[in-house]
Image 1 (cartoon, one colour):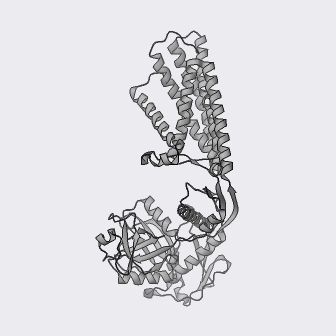
Image 2 (cartoon, rainbow, N blue to C red):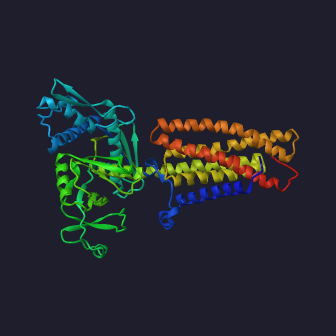
Image 3 (cartoon, one colour):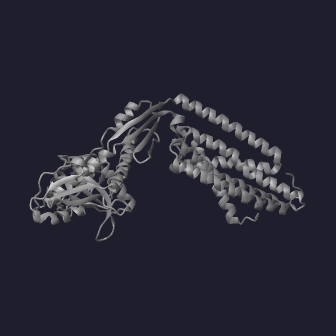
Length: 532
């Protein structure tokens, strides 16, 4: 129990050193922090209640999602049924009653129309249902109705995209570590520390990202590009992920296809190579422009530009007709999905309404920090003093473990770029008090074994062995409670649960493993007396 092999000693020491080192940047001023090596630039961020700022709660209009889905499928059906090679004549389309209705003029083509429409629908997640139900009524009328599973999947996708758009919009403000989280199925919480004008934030979230499709100017000289010179009729655009390494490329000034003509972009797989790709679809206007552009520019690159930055510049291998295409490249599933989200983020996919807004002043946050530091300092000092008075040498070991525990909590939070809120401080202080519980159990158990007349080695070893069961049982229930708070809670409750969970794991590590290591070092000196 007290025998530590050399590899385990080094593992414990490395964990303590790394955790302590990553805690240091959180206590440094900004000027000193900015001079640290990049791998050390990790610190705990302060939440809205500690630093002040703006809080906005946005709610999505799910009915708007259903309307947009009907509009999108309408455009896709129009394009598909009007293909020149096998055109199917249809009457006017109606979208009344949350369904798309239209009549096929030639009744003999109804079945063919249905067969053409069904591939335009897709599976709704893992529900086993399609996102649209296609039915034939009165012999010649086709009714396309969004299913509940399809709407739920669309809302989920729309909220995912909206969250990404909001994050990108706020990042442009240069604010430090905004908090953007989903709340429930159709709400988004936005907290921006340091921003005292919620009206500015609301205006920002109402903006739409600009997505453009332009031809790359292949006549541009790389030397001119490096000097910031673009050919006549072209402009320079940043391309941070250029596989050729050139940070900028030249694109034609004329926008060939506008971003508002893009219906959808999804991560999928190439049917030939099974490699991850991004599938895109345009509406009828965008499909016509895209077809004409690709017919005239085979074997030329085509830049996709979002907010003035090139996302991707794939090559046009052949004319792309029908309004859909695939973007291929050296994608992983994750990078392809991120690109698809970025393409869909050309505009907010769902109407968002502000249902709650408030501003927290910096004075309140500073006062909360001051009181939190006082509470934490007094609690820590009291615990340190009592442990030394009660347990002597083993109390000192417990105090050292407690100090390492505090540093490791801060270091781990910094590594994960976590945000500390006022409830988080409460969880921090609670962890400090609870961290020594394990040492109290161990030390009291050692006292019991000492009274039974065991040797010093047997006393310490049995004390740790017998106390561990109660320690692990107690902390297991705490982890379960913290997990439930994190799963069912939101905002400050989650912050409290995160700090509490990290504190539980670090306190068990420091209180049991680290103090046991200290005790083993002392026992190697063959002490003759044990005072505890």
